[in-house]
Structures are given as C-alpha cells and as structure tokens.
Amino acid sequence: GLALFQTSTCINCHAIRGVAGADLRVAPDLTHVGSRRQLAAGIIENTPANMRLWLKSPQHIKPGALMPDFTFTDEQLDQLAAYLSTLQ
Image 1 (cartoon, rainbow, N blue to C red):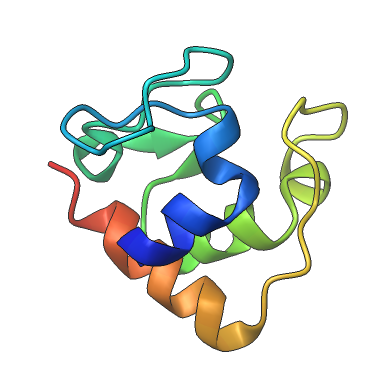
Image 2 (spheres, rainbow, N blue to C red):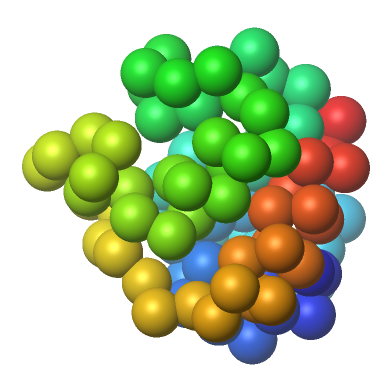
C-alpha cells in the first residue's frame, strides 16, 4: 500500500507525516486517516469497505469532489485501503 501511494498520483496531493515526498498540502493530510470516523468530508463512515469505495470512485460518493476517479485494479485498491486504514 505504501509503495502504491508513493508511485501513484496520491503523493502529488496528499501529505503523510514521515513518508518521504508526501508533504504537499493540496488535499487533506492523511497522516491519521485511519482514525477518522468519517471519510469524504463526513459523507460516509470510515470502514475498510468504504475506504475502498472512496478510492475507487470519489465522484460517485461525493459528486464534484476535487479528487478524480482512478483506474486502480482490485488488488491495488485492497492494498491502498489496507495501508491507509493503518494510519492511526
């Protein structure tokens, strides 16, 4: 998950303290995203399944979101959602 975050476009917008190169503040800081109760500006509960849905299609969850939809594979979605869920 971390390697995918670092090699995909995620790192171009999001910060995660302690992750090399993840220091931009264009989009929300994900340092503690796993401990948040909600995702997508409070639209959905923060569960592993919802994290995966949000990563797959933010526009479906929150039309007009600045985060674009991505073409991650199912395996990549699983890896990224699992990694982000560990960020407490």
